[in-house]
Length: 349
Ligand SMILES: Nc1ncnc2c1ncn2[C@@H]1O[C@H](COP(=O)(O)OP(=O)(O)OP(=O)(O)O)[C@@H](O)[C@H]1O
Ligand SMILES: [Mg+2]
Image (cartoon, rainbow, N blue to C red; front, side, top):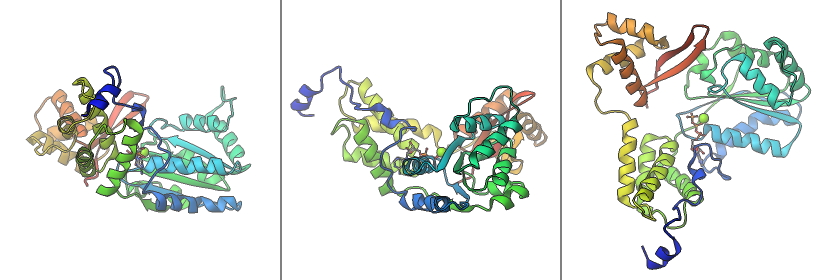
């Protein structure tokens, strides 16, 4: 590094200009490479501008490829464009019961008198309010929703709406109640993973937000981009950038060098698929595939019947490690008995 920079960057200064830009929740102003997808979403909404019913849409694609970002961006543009279409965004991972979701709707509609009202009363109020105008309703992570009656109600009772469902699971729709499916009749659009070049461009944009100029060389960016491209998840790239920078800072370096990047990459390989699974993990993974959506104790019983002889505790540890390797998905469910966990295979890609 030149002396000039050494002088400018005093010891106390961070190499981050704006660390927040590496948060997965950060919203960049420009969202490249999703123009045609955005256009598609806009087309589904378009009839609402003419006071006609909109088209419903199901968006699917792998994790970390801009589904949430791009859709939220459409909502933002819609809000800037018109007051005649009400946008509501719900994350069904965070809010997964009918009551929680309807409260979100009340909040979005600025309706405050929710206390002492039953869920069905609140649904009627929300429907009545939404029917005064048109609405675009986004249910993100829809596969996490625990009760479908809210969806049924809105599809059935709203006159002018576009309902957008977002999921990682391409075939989620097929498992859905026929009554909902036939009323929803959604268009489908798949978000494809970014190419290597696109991945690089997106990360470059984040680097410009996050770091001072010349903090990272183009070779190192190349390395991070290619590792991100292999995982197909942009969050991996954001993690690598932040991790490399933190390693650099911990070594009092004012630039990110290739050894910092290598160290960060070796960390991330921990949550990519392990090359080898042990016999028990292989057995459990097979059982999850043949018996999807079982609760942990049920799966443990199946495991024992199939000659698994490890303790329940070891079994749970194996489940955790398969989840960490992104080979299975463990969904937390809350019901009257308390918390339990449902296990299913993650689509292989
Ligand atoms: N085209 C893009 N330009 C800039 N940043 C992007 C782009 N696409 C994705 N990102 C960033 O990558 C991260 C993951 O994107 P997002 O949260 O939209 O993924 P997702 O497809 O909704 O994933 P999941 O299915 O896991 O919810 C976010 O930080 C987002 O800002
Ligand atoms: Mg998302």
